[in-house]
Length: 542
Image (cartoon, rainbow, N blue to C red; front, top):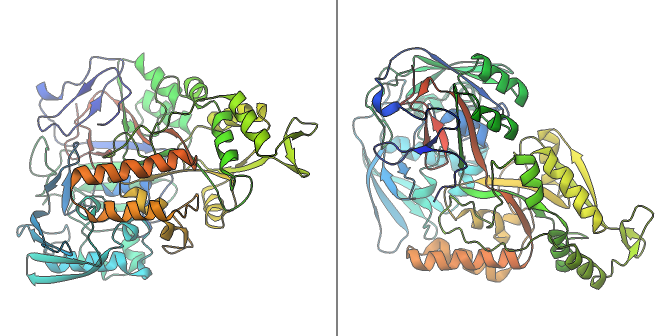
């Protein structure tokens, strides 16, 4: 189910861990004795979050950190099944319009306050409150109408319409349970130091440098499949922000960092020759990293031109030369680690096909640069990109070079993350690199239902970046979101994926990936299956 690029893989006793070791003796956690104590230094290449509370906005850099100190009602295993975590059981009403959730009665937040149904109500209502500024969490809970508390440890989640993805959504770290007492401090204070039930707590945040996490001595709720119980082994984690890939890898090689992420392809290959290093590369669920084609304006308002663009770019060659065999081409609008992903993308590099399609679409002229023209207009594709989308710059350059041979003028616009989001929100692009991390095929509803063309969350954010408005797609997505019949659900999502492929609205490149390099002395790194993000609860330093 999860695609790995590796030379070896090891599973925990519970089967939920996917740890891949390259270039060394392999994982020996099972035979070693954990050693409590110590500080793990983690160097991240993701952006520094503007807020440590993932209920506010909701992006991957927040989720990476929050996985260490926040937890969710449910746990999703590597087969996509839902298991209890802070919840103990759940029952769907016969009319499918509510879920009754029973909760553990022995859990406290790290500030000492109790976890109960009132806390569940407070957290869900906070995510739905526009003042919170949630994006990912709020979109996931858009069908929730209210939360009732019929008993101290019983919560009833009432829905506007059936939601087959509700439990999946509530197993993502963007929808964690946080201390209501801490939330009452206000948005700013909670950004600085969220309070949850996780194995670590936030001790300090030095902006543009690091976040320090310390062990929660009273921790009682390990995720299913953990290798031990009780508090974490590590005393603390120093989470450093190191945007330069070469500097990150140098820190790993020198031992200044124990673990690094966003491992660049050449560094993953180099690690194979280093007996002291291990590499983990795993697919994250949701939408792959892909180009989304803006159908609101020329040239991609013309389906023939979209298809011609697909045929004009050589993605396979770009991945082979830039990623050095550390990733594979995506063949679906859903990541390979997402339920019901269907291989619907069969198009390959075909300049002759691109030429025929462009001729038929009227782009028959050529200017002095070899760019095709029509009615005096150049065939220009504006492509803004940012390092926040994990696609190597060399891929953009190869897309530009191969598309030019067919007569496309791909204008690459490197932007900082803030300006890239402005371009996104204002529809100021023709092709936009994007991904969306979510542990459910419901990501297709969030990003391709016509309702997602409008501003769905604060900050003018819209999730439907191609501006798809297809009544049949809307119908299929609505039905898929309302049925709990797995066979019917799979067929509905397959039909949506086929429509996206046939319309050439998106050009998948590769699965989103968690790419981690680690010192081999670091044992017990685990990727939690819901989002394939690392958890350091079982981790110790040998």
